Amino acid sequence: MLRTPVLGRSLWKSSDFSVSVKQMWGTPRRHPLRPERRGSQGPCVQRSQTDTGHPLWKGPVSVPGGTRQSPINIRCRDSVYDPRLKPLMVSYAAESCLYVWNTGYFFQVEFDDSTEGSGISGGPLENHYRLKQFHFHWGAVDAWGSEHTVDDRAYPAELHLVHWNAAKYRSYKDALLGESGLAVIGVFLQLGAHREPLQKLVEVLPEVKHKGAQVAMGPFQPSCLLPACRDYWTYPGSLTTPPLTESVTWIILKEPVQVARNQSFLSVQKRLCLLVGVLFCRLFLKAGVRPETQRLSQATRAGTRC
Image (cartoon, rainbow, N blue to C red):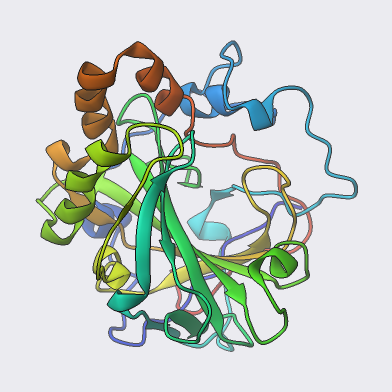
């Protein structure tokens, strides 16, 4: 049995889900190819089976007993309405933003997680989860860059805000391997209007064009990257990069956010390639997304009706 998505309720706004998907999201392009479940980030980006990619993905990836691997294709009609789900509570402190750095495969924005200052609660979560970092996944073409898909449709990019269960674990590393250890908010990005809050991040990327480079961000409010409507799907899943631990509660926001074409990370990446050459370009093109996985057991739930 494939997992089905669960819809969540918004604290700020209740959505009328009789509105069509096109009215809510525009018309994301449908990609004709379906990838195999293989351990290679190159194929994830290109949706082909011939690329080489992220070193973590080289060779077969074994997940003993793994039945909750991510990402998945969310099917709206299979979403199970769950009235027990609560509104998602988001409380981020801009001053907890520390720096952005180049991991060697993508850029990542780190936060001070030593206090309860920034985090989430409610929704499908039983505890408060602290914000650790956020990063983006994008592809070699704008037509397909997101890790999760909705009714087989992909978006140009996907934002992941990673949180850990500070009530249950002593550190992020402990939570990484533990049951209900992590909660990740997924946000789809689509091309559209200019998003001013994102510009600060776009402008700092040339300063981290080399692996290991980092630069202070100063105050940055990550909630500016979220859509106004916080309705969501949720399901228990895994990290999408090794070690692929099944410790993640996924919260996928239904409404995407718009970014201008010159703010898309593919566009930024191409401009940086002109500055630092082909190696950088290849590196980031291959750091995109994991192929969708065949999901078993527990269904995806939703707090509002589709």
